[in-house]
Image 1: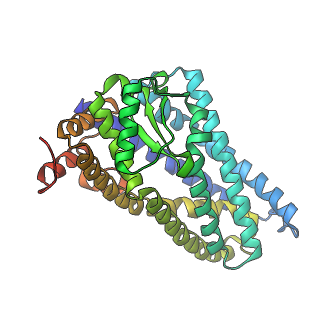
Image 2: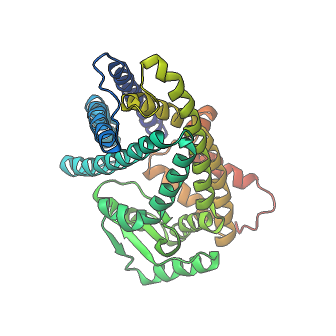
Image 3: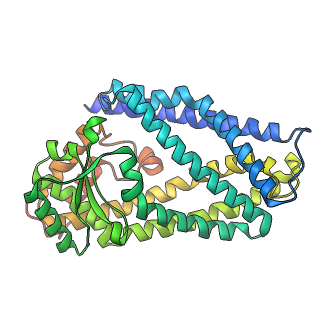
Length: 368
């Protein structure tokens, strides 16, 4: 299992890196093409600018998806099937892929239309953009369990009333109000298992994959959900949203500088010239990659704190060990990646480091 996990993650890293490289190349070619002499003038009015942004983004998005399609199929379908993670039929995987692309395409269109409206209206567009994108992050977090999850999973109320009562009691002990417990049909697609507490305020609910119910003991399920409740009890959702907002402010400020630098280089007719869209997309992609390790470092910290919370709440060390072992086996997790790999790529501490940290922690009120 360990060798399989290492091979799977090695190939996934190589292929995902190649896909990023192809994406960057397509965007760079878009920058070069947009700088050509046939570039149309900047539209004088907003409806014209909005239409040009739509056309530019559609062409650029189609080119990126066409160029990366083989790698996307290998990374998302062939590779997990080969390693036994995925058993979803090709047509259903393709349908999910199409839905995901439609949603991401719509969000990208809204994002770039907003950006170019701001670029046209104010030199401090980056401040307003960060505020609007922060509001978008909050909205997405709130509506995900209500609108997004059901697009990809059939969610049904948990039928095991004993386990349901146990989990709702756990939520009350954690001080986290939830609407109820739902089950997602992950087994239709994959053997992977997980559980989450999703949403904000009145949309907050517990969601378990059905693979969790069939492969884990009730104690282990309780630990998984106690960990997730810890994020809400600690305000981690708000803290991560605040971090995303701060990173967005930094990214857009730097993007403003790169747009001003690239304008003369590519012959752009100002910041709001839609011919600069490939350059803006390339800059935002690179800045996103640079910011990811910062967000990942903070995420690993709050994940460790959620482990502490769950252990203190459940007082069940065997469930902690058992849940992590089963998650690692079913999800083909790399139990101990290199330190550099974990620092750059991992949103959670590796499984072995999570276990070792708890064994070395003095004074935790744990029952062996």
